[in-house]
Image (cartoon, rainbow, N blue to C red; front, side, top):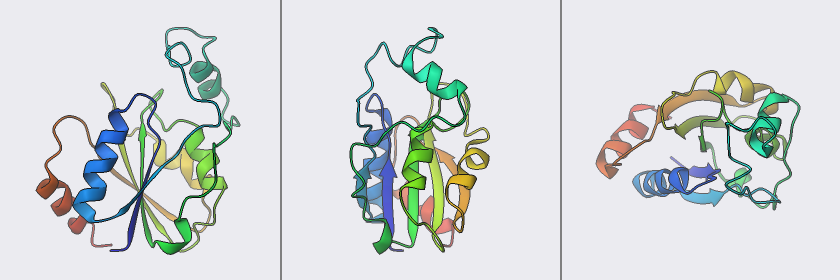
Length: 158
């Protein structure tokens, strides 16, 4: 498997999961960074006027990326990680997918969350990566055992 583990992490939790997964699949690691980093106030989901709340209410929101240097073209399988926001992927993931050509690639989603699953994340991301196969993966919360992650990835038969 020629894998890229690309991830967005607002607080470091998803970064930890992505690093463990990259080690388990011997994949390249790429952090999806917003042009303007999120502050704790931006992430306050209880504040309807916080940046993340405003972005997630607007399906057309596309937060700018800090760069577009992800080595997507050199990989067949992309593990795409994110924290679950409002039961779906943050809209910066749509920005990322729309910045590259994923035609013919398989994108496997993984996420972290304090209490919800992947929800309808795949449905919300598919229109941003026409020509790619996007599949739900799994939640990667808590202690991440490298052998278990490797077995999961191998079980996907990609």
